[in-house]
Every structure is written in C-alpha cells, then in structure tokens.
Image 1 (tube, rainbow, N blue to C red):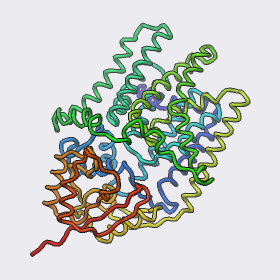
Image 2: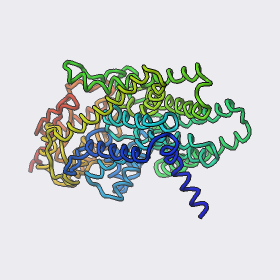
Image 3: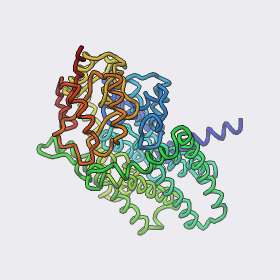
Image 4: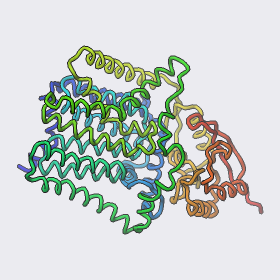
Length: 528
C-alpha cells in the first residue's frame, strides 16, 4: 500500500504543483483542458462526429501498422527508415480498437491533449499564474494546427518533453531512471531526436553537478539514467536484429538516410521554402503561424541563454536548472532536423522554443506586458477563427470500408469517391497509401510507393513488379513523369515501363495539395 501511494504521488505531484503552487486554479486548468479538447475535436471531426480524412505522411505509418497486424515483421518484410515506435504504436491502437477512420483522428485528439498537458506542466515550473496556460495555447493554434500530421517526429518530441518534465520534478534516482526510459522511447520513435535528447540530458546532469558542486552520487545518477535507456533501446532493437538481421537494421536506420535522402527537401536549402506567398490580407493572416514558428525556432534559445548568462542571480536556482534543461533539449531537437529544416519539421520541434519564448516575455515590464497581451489575443483569435472555419467550411462525407469519412477538399473527395465506386475491399492496389488505407485495399508489404529519386531502391522496384505480376492489381496511381519530381538517381524506369506496357490511363485527378495531378492507370484486359 505504501508503494502504491508513493507511485500515485509521483504521478500527481506535478499537477498538484501546477494547481496549488503556481497561482492557477483547478477551475482554470480544467477549463483550459476542456477548451483544448473542443479545439482538437474540431480539427479532426465534424460536429456530427464524422472523422476527417487524414492524408499525410502519417498514412505511411498507419499502412505499415496494418501490415504488422497481418503478420509482417518490420525491416524484414517491409522497409522503415526510422526506429519502430510509431508503427508499433499505431498497430497496438488498431489491435485494440480496429482499423476505423474515427480511431485515426482520435489518436490526433489524444496526442494533442497529452502534449498540451505536458507543455502546461513544464510551463508551471518556469512561469506563474495565467501565463502557465499561454505556451499550450500557442502550441495548439500556431504549431500543431500548422503541422497536423502525426508522424514519428511529433511522438518523439512528446516523449522528450515527458522526460524533461520528469527530470524537472527532481533528480532522485527514480526520476532519473524514468527520464532515461522516456529518452529511450523518444529514440525508439525517432533515432536522431531521441539520441540527441539523451546526450543533452547527459550534459545537463554533468552541468548540474558542476554548477551545484554536488559531485557525490553523480556516477550513480548517471548510471540510473544510462542503464534503463540502454536496456530499453537494446531490448527492442535487439528483437528486430534477431528477426531481420543486423545488416538490414544498420542499413535502414543508419546508412540509408545520409546516402539516399537527397534533394532540396532534405537539405538546409529547404529552410523558408514553405513560407506562403502573400497576395491578400487573408494570405497575410494565414502566414502569421509561419512567422511565429520561424521567429522562435531556434533563435529564442540564444536569447534565453544570453539572459541566463547576463542575469545569473535574478533567476532562482531551481528555475535556472529547469530552464537550462529546457534549452539543452530544445537545441537537441532542433539539431536533429537541421539537415532538412522544412516548416513541418520545425513545427514538430517547436514546443520547447514556445516555452522559452513565453518565459522571456514574463518580465514585469511594460513592453513585455504588451507582448503577452498580443500573444494572448493572437491565440484566442486564431483558436476561434480556426474552429469557426472548420464548422462552416464546405465538406462532404463518404461511407468507406473503414467507416464514414469527411472531406474538406473537393478535389480529394472526388478522387476517393471515384476509387470507392470502382474498387472492392482487399482488391490489390498500389502507389498511394491513403487510398489503400481508407478503401481497405491490399498493397505489397515491401514498400508503399515508388519515388522518382534515389529513395526507392532497385530491389524494391523488382519486388513490386513481381507482386504486380502475381496479383494483377487493377489500379495504380502515378505522378506524371514531366511534373518535375524526377532526378537522375531515380530507379523508377522499370516500373514506369511496366505500367505503360500493361495499363492504360483511366483518370487524372488534379490535386491541389501536392501541386501536380495524379494519374490513375487501369490494367488492360488480358487477351484471350
């Protein structure tokens, strides 16, 4: 019983501190959580409860999760360039609730609430009063809403922030060990993010020792942090080394990205390329989240470190340690995506920067008071506008094999409706995961699509061609070859040649979100 009570105190301690010690009432906190729930619900569902379609990179992980449910082994049976956490998470959710459209969006709501809660707990350790709620509000309306695509980046950031919150609560051995476990989870979700966060926390533990002069017990504390991390990571990856082979794991997780993730999208040149063009007041309004994210990541960390250096005595020692930990982890998250700082990736590592920016404007000066007022007003206005827009915008609903699904993009709706009318569940199909997921179509496990660059390997193309020849998939989706997406490294020529020889162009769907139309090719009837 005593152990159970101690565990409960460990879980509830931060929330109690938030409500009772930081000047925030339980009513205000409960209201904020309810408001976050409503906002997130409207991002993923119609008022009637119909879930919106999820079309983004998250569909790749959702599709792989379905393959796992059908018995496929990651890395052995299909390619994956990140550690297995996201695929396993979605597979576990599908195992519990089934492969349904509402489950996909429910994951988005649950993730958003979890992130809002953790961000608020961390904020309670560095600011006071109603300002505790501001980072979470900015995260929802400027950050998550701008990158609502639940890939491994987001989940890894959540695990890293949980580790930060645990360590901010104290540096006893139990907390240090749990921080190591959550760093391991971050690594199992994204190997680069988790590994860099692990290093950042090691540096923090060493810095805290030197800053406080408490050398005693440092080795034990470091061991309590490192050993759980190593055990969890080695245990999970060791299983896949056993099932798939060390050479496969090494190629997928270590060698592939630096060798084959090429082009401007995965280089520093992509920075600022996603900034929207401004040609009207509406465009300027929609550009505000971009301005905010680009302004705070990563520059706010340098401003924060400078303030900590210039005013070492003005910040209480405990809060100073919390802020140093937040800065180190935030910089680690940024460095994990610096090789390809697309706007989406900047959003996924922005929560620590948002926390630091709110701390910087918490000073009791007239200027900072005005800044806080502007941020609060922007958060409220954007939250209201985004919610109202979702309620009033055009939408259409389809009854799909995995459940009723809503669409707010007319071009996307027409593509899904056409395929739904011309296919049956479990029919073989290739080259667009979102369609195969929502229409319950069968796809090859080895790879979900064939790229027009070096991403798709020659052996994967060969495997897909063998699958197509065996299954005689009726429909294949392709992007026109002259759309500008191809490179000299592309291995897609045999695939395109096979499609042109065995299929005919059936439909062309002009999809806005990808800037190029999609071609739907239908297999020619076999000659008698």
